[in-house]
Image (cartoon, rainbow, N blue to C red; front, side, top):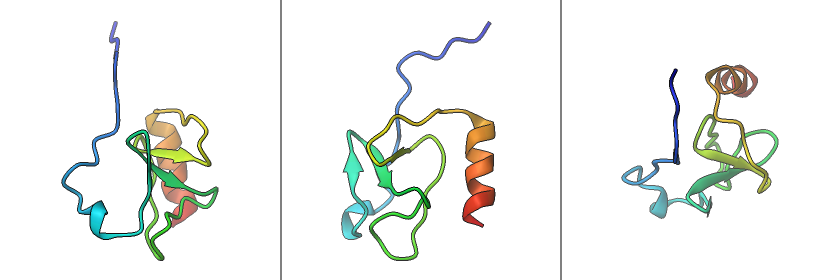
Length: 70
Protein backbone atom coordinates (compact mmCIF):
# COMPACT_ATOMS: atom_id res chain seq x y z
CA UNK A 1 0.00 0.00 0.00
CA UNK A 2 1.20 3.47 -0.87
CA UNK A 3 -0.30 6.42 0.95
CA UNK A 4 0.53 10.01 0.07
CA UNK A 5 -0.31 12.56 2.72
CA UNK A 6 0.21 16.29 2.49
CA UNK A 7 1.10 16.52 -1.17
CA UNK A 8 1.30 19.98 -2.60
CA UNK A 9 2.53 21.91 -5.60
CA UNK A 10 6.20 22.76 -5.96
CA UNK A 11 6.52 25.90 -8.08
CA UNK A 12 9.37 27.70 -6.34
CA UNK A 13 12.35 28.46 -8.54
CA UNK A 14 10.41 28.44 -11.81
CA UNK A 15 10.70 32.20 -12.26
CA UNK A 16 6.95 32.73 -12.18
CA UNK A 17 7.32 36.00 -10.31
CA UNK A 18 8.64 37.60 -13.51
CA UNK A 19 5.51 36.56 -15.46
CA UNK A 20 1.76 37.23 -15.33
CA UNK A 21 1.14 33.71 -13.98
CA UNK A 22 -1.08 33.88 -10.87
CA UNK A 23 -1.05 31.50 -7.94
CA UNK A 24 -3.96 30.32 -5.78
CA UNK A 25 -2.82 28.80 -2.47
CA UNK A 26 0.42 27.76 -4.16
CA UNK A 27 -1.26 26.27 -7.23
CA UNK A 28 -1.00 27.83 -10.69
CA UNK A 29 -4.33 29.31 -11.80
CA UNK A 30 -5.46 28.22 -15.26
CA UNK A 31 -8.67 28.43 -17.25
CA UNK A 32 -10.56 25.54 -18.79
CA UNK A 33 -8.09 25.57 -21.70
CA UNK A 34 -5.14 25.23 -19.24
CA UNK A 35 -3.76 28.63 -20.25
CA UNK A 36 -2.31 30.85 -17.54
CA UNK A 37 -2.59 34.64 -17.48
CA UNK A 38 0.75 34.75 -19.31
CA UNK A 39 0.06 34.60 -23.06
CA UNK A 40 1.29 31.37 -24.60
CA UNK A 41 1.97 29.65 -21.25
CA UNK A 42 -0.09 26.55 -20.50
CA UNK A 43 0.19 24.39 -17.39
CA UNK A 44 -1.07 20.89 -16.61
CA UNK A 45 -0.84 18.34 -13.83
CA UNK A 46 -0.53 18.46 -10.08
CA UNK A 47 0.37 22.15 -9.85
CA UNK A 48 -2.86 23.63 -11.24
CA UNK A 49 -6.23 24.80 -10.05
CA UNK A 50 -8.93 25.32 -12.67
CA UNK A 51 -11.09 28.36 -11.94
CA UNK A 52 -10.38 27.89 -8.23
CA UNK A 53 -11.78 24.35 -8.16
CA UNK A 54 -9.89 21.37 -6.73
CA UNK A 55 -8.00 19.35 -9.31
CA UNK A 56 -7.38 15.59 -9.15
CA UNK A 57 -3.69 14.78 -8.75
CA UNK A 58 -3.62 11.67 -10.91
CA UNK A 59 -1.13 10.73 -13.65
CA UNK A 60 -3.78 9.75 -16.19
CA UNK A 61 -5.54 13.10 -15.68
CA UNK A 62 -2.32 15.02 -16.38
CA UNK A 63 -1.68 12.85 -19.44
CA UNK A 64 -5.13 13.70 -20.82
CA UNK A 65 -4.53 17.40 -20.10
CA UNK A 66 -1.26 17.28 -22.03
CA UNK A 67 -3.02 15.81 -25.04
CA UNK A 68 -5.71 18.50 -24.88
CA UNK A 69 -3.12 21.29 -24.68
CA UNK A 70 -1.09 19.87 -27.56
